[in-house]
Length: 604
Image (tube, rainbow, N blue to C red; front, side, top):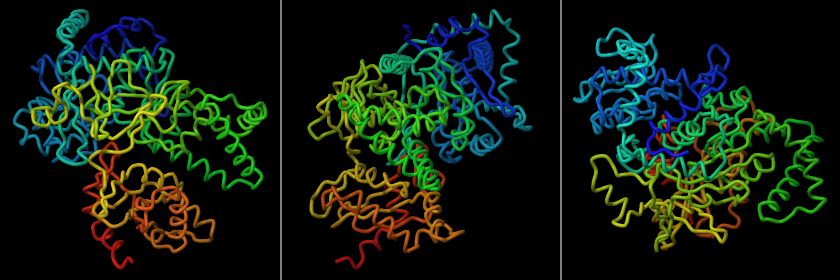
């Protein structure tokens, strides 16, 4: 399928499926049950909202904010805004009013679409500080309030009713046809782990090139069902959970929340999911925790199956044919153990796509032996976002696969990954200096990541260039591989390595409080708080033994010699993480400076 703009891609999907009442574009949960939404229903809403925006005076090139959780109205707003040539600016719902003000003032937003009363309240607090803002539109009819500045989505759609339905459709098509491939489609503001967020300008050409290359990289068909839970405002889910399914005619079901994902998986029975490693790690930890509560005989069967599965998967991945005995053992292990885990996911998952952070080898092996295909990929917002991904049948654990078909990747002399292609952003909004720093004269995007190519031609990420630590002895230390290694412990949720300009490395350890709670409970300690857990001598000894075991093959200068167990998890709300769950290294070091210094006091 050929398309050069997102509106063209959308209208092609509508042309193929709008007359099929049995073909759902989306599925959402209403009153406890999932209900499908046809392509015909979607296009009618998109056209009405688009024409309503035109009636409000919205024109091509205007910036329109979207502040909403994943839901059907998010999709309608996006397709309507971009369909008339305006530029949408979606942001995370977790941002504060001040952060929203900074973004919407920077992009000079003309209108902002919000989901509910809570998000509306934040915008109303700052609207006087955004001179360009003319309209606020709320999705929920019941949350409108009495402010005359606010309209609901339904009220905007009513504005379109002065035009007959057929003429409305024709008008939308005319505006969609005027959208050019090089026109800006969206501004996506980076999370800002190291500084002020910058607005990444992605054009229709950028997005369409990425969608089409992803379609070549792994098989997606119209019968596929996606479960969407990652924020649509992020480029990863925008491509993987919106535009790719739209281009292929697949159905997207919306998860109720991240907490409800396990339940929604069983209800929706998806065939494809985009996810992040943390979901896989938590699911694996819960499965193992449940096994440990079962009778000893069942525990032995499980651990035997895992041992067999690991040997079988590694033999398969390396291209070796498993022995007849190993193949027979795996068949028994799958029937006795793995098939039951597979069914917990609805029994239809064909592909998991993992991105956003490295996937540990232990977790990758576990899910592969259960029968899932996990395709680990790599990208960044400035690349629309996908640059590389493992292919089905060619998985190399620990890598992010080969570059997409229309993407060039090379490794600079200092190890930095450089990328070039039709998917690379136009630049940063009103920031030529940062644009020139990121994209050189030959069109290479400097990703800021360090990597190598393996013998099989797959890309392996080793660290962030700007995150490299240099010890007081002059040793370069890449924190990510060590942090990921230590986080493989099921008792450890996150490890944060410290060691820049230091004699040795230390770490802040965020434990998995749920798993630790079970562990101490089995030892007769009940109703213990997180704070008490962090100071419990047995817990400290357990974490020490886990770190020692995991880092035994790490170079001496890279090993964690002291650690502090944190009493609470790192979250976006408490400031340690960005909305996409990347750690804010500078913020963490500043916030926990006292705890860090104590680890270096009195050490011989």
